[in-house]
Image (cartoon, rainbow, N blue to C red; front, side):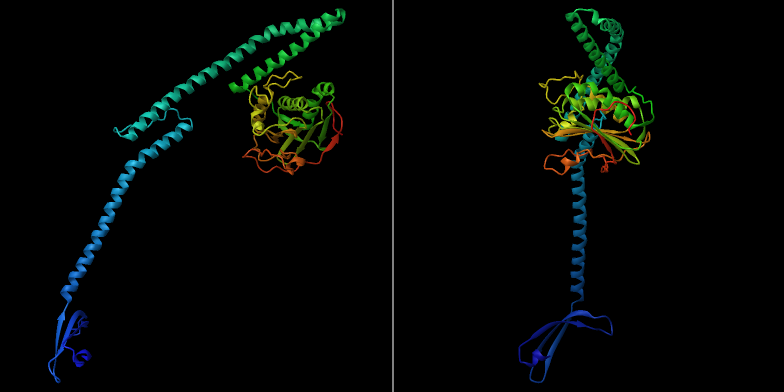
Length: 416
């Protein structure tokens, strides 16, 4: 040993000891010089101590692993005990929100979560009762409207016959009676319109509205609707400009209902056009046909492009009406469009006017994915004003088909 040769009293070190070509085992060697000639060395094998250390290390590892596993199981059980009722409550709330009014939570124990379950069940029960009451009330109201509308048909028919007779003989009456007969005739027409709207909305509520589908050129419906609105436009001094494609735009539709939708849109545009021109544009592509009615009047405020289809909704209740609308026209038009599997959408800006777009699939039962006309007028889509986005389910709208413009109010007829 070098250390012993240096004259130090003793020296020790750990080493590996090999016995009879066996595997090495740890050991401790201690050496000390006895004289200048002799040195003494002691070799102490440490295999027993090493085995003890290995046993302690393995024991600590196993115990640590078991302890982590036990802690994990305990944490899982505690978390499940706390989180599971919360998740169950969330699931019950989601199902209740989806319309499952019979959904209730299980009440277990008397802790805070159980009190939450009791409160939730009481709320769900109260909500179910209120919704059932509202459904019964709504059903009664719909039935009442339907019954009253049908019952009024008979007396209205009699009054209408008498009114028509007086109206035909109005020239033989004095001026005051003549004026009274004209007012009577106008109010009878308005009453008939209101009654017709009530009957139609009751059919939609009852799910009894049916379509008489046949291939129809959308241009014919546009011309018919504009022709029916011609007197109102002339009275207001407004010109209805038609932009119709030169080629037929045929689609499977109920011509009566589509004409009623377009007539309602045109009359509504005339009413709110502020004495400016109303533009009616039609276009089609391979899958859809569309008609857009544009006015440059008061426009719509933000959010009103959806509210305008609600029943009896008016943008400005203080605004005087000249056409005597019932407040149901746009609502019925929306129902008719959806009955065809189509869209009826609105866009508007305050002071920049509004545009209503009707989009229909060309084949009955076909899913509508896009429209050949943009909802936002091209001159406004590039401006700084607010843009009403299309419905979320709508595919990007294409460009309108080539159209020819007719700068006059046109009655029903062929488009050259």
